Image 1 (cartoon, rainbow, N blue to C red):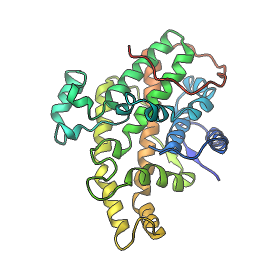
Image 2: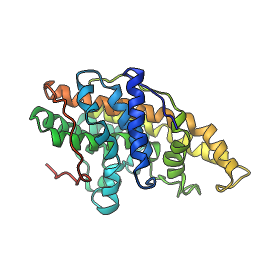
Image 3: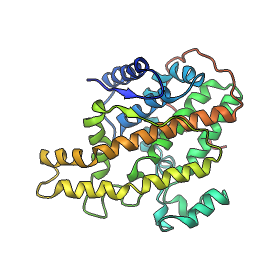
Image 4: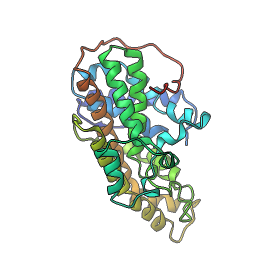
Length: 300
């Protein structure tokens, strides 16, 4: 297997990121039900998308960031309080293009209401962990920075997956049950090794909430394409027929790749923004030792 990634770094560094993923996959349990491999690809590619000197710091921790990429998903399986952090269903309380929510989130900078919390709070969590990461870097708390970089990346990557932005997250409302894993896991597992990712360069986000909302809107706009691809691919077949998935790959594969690329740019931009906000501290180059799975960070 070979996974080629064209990122901000040189070609040899992309191959290095690929080897990190493949070595870890060989020693890991089966794929969890964006899926396990997508998060690993995004984290590895986001490291290579960083400019120096931050890239060197994250490269030294690349194996850690990949190995722990889905720890937040594992925590969500064990702890109900973690689960809403992985999605946001704004359509449950506002209508596209979500101007009322934009005023609340971006302009008034308010937190979620109790009713909104029932439909996820990933947008707030992305801001929270980017700021936590920045504070970690400012105070030179390197172990905390590694953990908070994982959580920042995971929630940010989830926001680039269209089915993390809608109430019909698993096709349960349109007789397309199972579409979540078909798109974020099955499709990525089948095509990921063929992709040459071309993520946009990092951007310093001067207004985090505006950028987070922009990414949410871009993601939400893709959801109809996912459902349409599934319906068209299914016509004349059933989900167990290999001809369905062959058609689904053709119809939705490019969209999945572009959403992964959006995740790479988004994650690396948040990491870089956290470092800039911290005052661009000089970063250590040592590689961290292996640690146990990450625990849920305490609320501020």
